[in-house]
Image: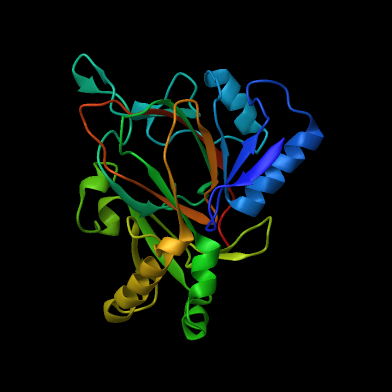
Length: 273
């Protein structure tokens, strides 16, 4: 087993591990440690059916059921993401287009701790996934800003009717929403990471709009600084797990006439603190 960093910002490739087979506890402990150290881990060239991916994901914790049943597979922990069609209709979740930086399920009381994505079909170009390091973004804030956001919560909103196509944030009552700390503490590492995102964070609780908006804009811009971001260029057979508690992710646009098809499993998290 080898652990090869993917970028100065975050991420590591793990080589010499077959995720479809048995993995002893000592090796798995190293995999988990790499996940905590590097925030995103990648295993290339994997051949996984649903059951094999689920078995591997369950080593990291209890799996979370899909909140959008229309996109769930026979196993409710599995979701397919992409633009394949059946009878002329799109059948995957989040099928097309660019998506801004966000964290999965931040609008739920207990957002996912981790998200595991397995690539089955990819376009010839585009559709890359970008990951941002929430630890580095928090540390890079001016000291007075870190002090200002201490103890504050942000309201995160999701609109199931097509959040990624909207150019402006929907009102909380128009979607599903929950408030979480602006900066959350990772339960395993004890480090603080920014937990706001451009796609779904609506406002900071307790602050008027003329204070909340510029503060959020500063944090969004900090999160998205190029030196804090790793861009993943997918290959078929990539298995990628990111830590939703300290990373954000975004998607590049791609040719809608080519297929992009991924299998997603999420690991249940705790309530952010």
